Amino acid sequence: MKTSIYVLALGAFGIITTEFGIVGILPTISRQFGVSIDTAGWLLSAFAITVAVSSPFITSFTTKINRKFLLCLVMSIFVLSNLISAFSTNFTTLMIARILPAILHPLFWNISIAIAFKEKGAKGVSTVMLGLSLATVLGIPLTTYAVDLFHHWQASFFLSSAISLIAFIGLLLFIPSIPADHTKSTQNQLAILKSPLLWLNLISSIATLAAMFASYTYLTAYLEQITKMNGAQISMMLLLFGGMGTLGNWLMGIALNRNVLVTARLFLLLLMSVQILAYYLGGVFTPMVIIISLWGMIHTGGFLVSNIRTTQSIPHHALEFVNSLLTSSYNIGISLGAFLGGIVSAYYGVQYVLWVSILLLTVTFILSFVTFPKSIAENEKAKQLKHVAPACEQS
Figure 1 (cartoon, rainbow, N blue to C red):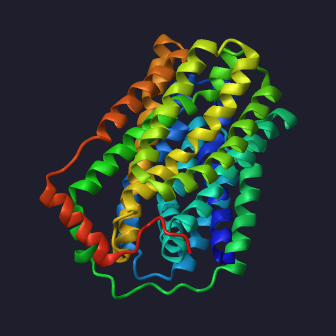
Figure 2: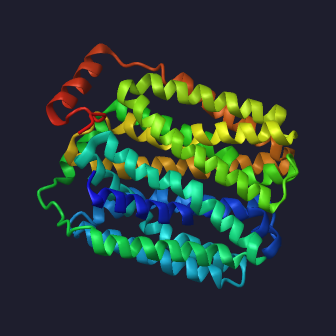
Figure 3: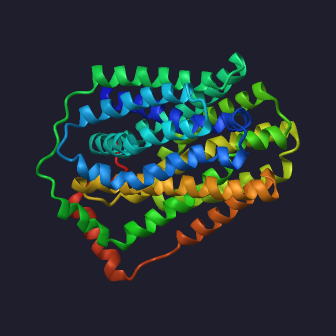
């Protein structure tokens, strides 16, 4: 595996730590600024909505700019935004500081995934996704623990800024110059929008991510209120969740190389099952520790499943554009899940956010059985054979 792909994974670690690190400190932020937990949840939702809206446009507007320059630019903005967040004196300033990096966030994700896919197919994508898993393993628990250790919410953002700075240095030193491909045609990229299979996969991705984050956004609050864990115990649970996620990401990559659709369905059923267990056993400490480990192992695979399922038949020239749509879908799903979970948590109690997730997973599972007329299916297969090698090949 090329060093550049591992460095891209490091960059993914930095941006995901910033995006999702807020999950572990939502109750603290809620108390610090005197807002409700569902209002604090908008720090994640607003970030995700901004990414969803900006993704296709920012990708199209920057097609003629060197890719390394864009990657470094994005990471430098994340360093700055975390520092601004740390010095925020009110909730509005903190919200603005969160939205600024979200505008450029899609560039890093779309470019890095496209580079990894072109270089190593599913194996390369899985490696970049490992950065996401490690952010869950180390980044999010560490930023949560930093607040508990230093007894101040600012510690979380200072740590996130330091992580982003290390990632920036790695990109600067180890990523070669990647000139923009001036031969790309916007018209050719937009032609992919005629594919009904693409739209089905994008809708499924939205529902999948909404299901994942309807419950995960409020996991800290759930463990605090239902399982009665303290700050240190919650940090350990987040660490366990993420650690098992790394294992799950690896296993998911293996499974996807064998059968994408079957693996996608199995993922949905497993995540649904573990959240049902969490609902009924969430108030019991020891079973909940086991459930958290299983939940973490399954949860992280949702990103990889959605990505490979969507991009497996996409021509190489359209990968960045499709990844921009996929990034939008991810973040629409994340914001929708956080929004729905916040409403249910505010009006019915945090334990019921799990049923929002279960319902959305059921809808996604049903969508996996939607098929198209034979003529459309054959046309999609012909495009795949003509333009790309199988997405899940190992090289």
